[in-house]
Every structure is written in structure tokens, then in C-alpha cells.
Length: 239
Image 1: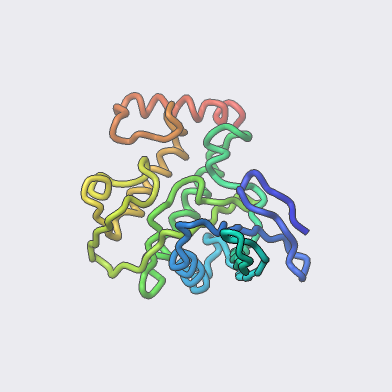
Image 2: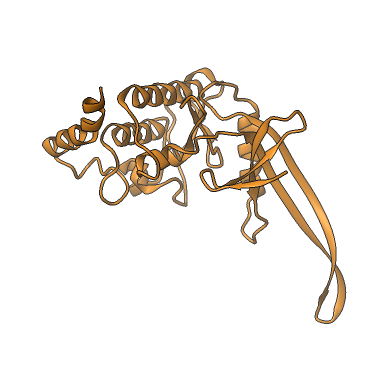
């Protein structure tokens, strides 16, 4: 049984054991990269941590249908791909930072920051070789019923040797969460995720800026302090 879940942008279904699962449908487009799928699947299969979303299955099916090309009958192959994950009922952290739902009190903010740091530490330090996410942002941090954060979406992740720097030809990730050396020179190192984590932490503490993202290089210290106070006032009053 499938139900579309707008919070996560995925289908919600049930495993044969009764557990709810989230299904990430991968559409068969002209520029689809099977290597990217294999990368995400392979990386997730090796990861087991309470602050990283758990992969529970993978679907790959080829369906053949009859069609015509220039009036001649042909057999058309359509590939259906999907990744199945544990279901995260609270959706993404992004929803809470953008005021689509009620805000977060300070203990929950701390819990999310701490859990995200622990998940990232597992990827960087405890995994051998380490895995670098390369697209860490609130939309890729999912929350369970107890507001435990879990890092998700490993489509861009890579294995990078510690202290090694590499370059890419195309821009990956999300601009507001990327360091300057990557935006300007396409340099990837083990520091990229740390920069992204810092921006995420600032958004959790102070909330996103007027453009929807926190611009760490553009906001003066006093303005940042004022923004934190404004963001925290309802919590202090309620406590």
C-alpha cells in the first residue's frame, strides 16, 4: 500500500513485516546516472548508526512494452528503480526552520545539533574508508517521532582519503551550504561537510535568513546576536 508523503517527497508504504517505509522513486530520465544510484545504495548498505537513515531495501525492475518507431513495431524497455528507507514521520528539519510547522524549543535544537554531529562523525571518523556526504543541509536531515535527527540522501557522497583534496568538473551540492574553495575552484576535501554543518547549526540557532538560507558571510555579529534573541524569545517566555 502506497501513500504520497509531501513532507519527505517520497512514497510511504508498508514492509511485509508491517513496518512503515519511505520509498524514494528514481525516475528513468535521459540523463539518469546508474552509477549515482549504485553509489548511494552501496554507501548506505555499509552504514549503521542511530543518526543516519537506515536503508531497508532496493527495487530494480525492467518492464517491456510494445511500441512503434517510424511505423515499425518495437519492444520498449522501461527501468523502474527505487530505494526503500525507514520511515521518518516528522519529515525534514527544513520544514521546522521554514515555519511550515511549529518551531523548535532549545532542548530540541540542541538534540538535533548533537545528533547530526554524531552522525557526521560516524561517516568521517568511524567508517573505513570515510564517507563524505557533500550535500548536508536541513532538507537532508530527517526527524523521527522523538525528534532524533538522521542524515539522509547519499546520492552525492564519496569516499575521500583523509586530508586529501580532489576537484570536480561540475558543481554538486547546494550553494548556501558550500565553502568558497569549492564554489570557486571545485575543490572537495574532508572539510566541505564541516562547513555545511556549521551553516546548518547557525540556521538551527538563529533561523534561516530572508532568502530562506542563512548567509554566514553577510550578517554582522550584532545582527546575528539579535536574530538569535528574537528566535529564542518565545521559548524563554514559555519556560
